[in-house]
Image (cartoon, rainbow over all chains, first blue to last red; front, side):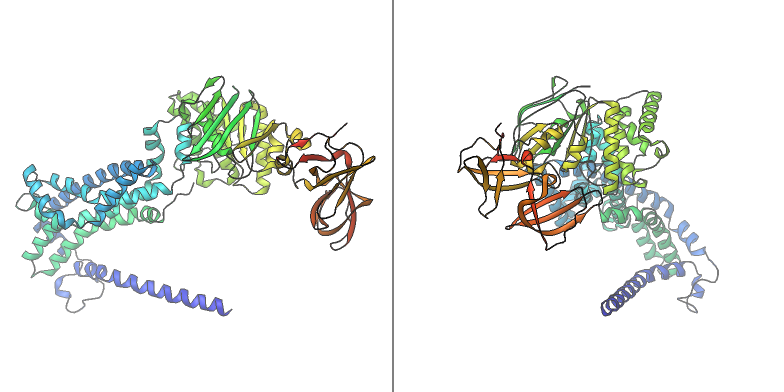
Length: 277
Length: 359
């Protein structure tokens, strides 16, 4: 009995702790939502309360004044192209690394893992000059080249771990069914990697969507700009009207939140690893 | 349909040789069971037939064709895996039709083949389900369906029943056997369960430590085991074995163990001289209650209804008996037992080889 009571108490404490942590993380989001959807005139009287009626003035003003539509398109282009490259290259490379027996694949794996450990800031200046020499500065192509390179180590790490947890018998069954190596990968392995692909897309997509420094460096002075850079510039210009700033932030955040809610089930499964037949 | 010939096959993993020259002939249409304890190399041998492991030495032929260098996908062999390996993202119908679709078979033919296999295995209502929505027995059936739909030359089964509960295992055992009797496709079946081997096989291949110990029909192995390993591996409960010295004076012969058990043998006996170390085996069902038998203390009584298994101790040596009739004695009591003389098995002790009983 004493043991059961102890367990219940521990579970209750743990759950309270987790709820409080959740509240801490949710509070800024709540604040952003309520402030963005209220006219700035009502902030002083009721800063924390829910809006009595939804007010979209901040959002629409920010959308038109900050030219968020074109920034959102640029961000979407960079995110989609980079994550597609990451998924294709990462899954293929990790499949080879995870399934090939021998020193070569292990060496390649270590090579990629080293890429996760090294701080990317070390490569900031050399990469910048390389991009300039390639004539890619000012073009989203520079970012679409940069992000897959930056994030491939993490992607391979995630994919390789997942593939190692998959029983080889699925691939063996497919090869006995008459599939060649490419067909085994395409028809059997890739579909089974859906959960970890969700994780890869979310982690990389959110990082690329939110990244500020690289687009600021590579795209400044051009007609291309990603959302964080545009919002940053907008905040600098409109710092007097925080309602507009919050409206702009809400617009920038919404796609990420939607993507997260759509893919979160896959993402959790990907982290948990394994697959239920 | 084709037979499978395995000749002088060896397998090494690094410096360790795990198969030391295996010779097995499985005739066309036969159901062969490879049985042995864990780590004996039976699954490795099956995977070599499948083309999933390389053959380091020797030759494997399927239907007369040497397949050593033929890829798994081109061997025309189907395999049922221990974990079934059903593709989780495909429905039952898609799982079963995968091989035919890969081969580019016309849609109507694919559909007919899948429906035919589903009818044989009673899978028609499940065709649109995914593997995760099926029970263990149903998954097992789908795995079999995936194998038969292609009409391959040879079926391979790698411990296919080990993930099922006891009742389902008995049911699926009968279904696999019935399927074989219907299709008559050459089958190699791996298990560590000798009951499965005995009940399903046309021929049983007993393996131990990378070698074949004996090949034969189930009852031949049971009645005339080639050595002590087979004698104690085949049969449940295992054969009782007493080790001692063969003693003969005048007309009577007997085995005397170091613990002091004296086992008289009336007539027959092995063709060995007195003083030879010897192992004598007898099946639990051949141990009978008899007034002139050995004194043994009853340790555990396990009634199963149709028979009673009794563990007893005779001068420190454990013996197991199985009685068809109801057993009255309780643990702690002493009974007198003796093995039926015409059911004794004799083995020499250095290699454990069987010795034929003399005339």
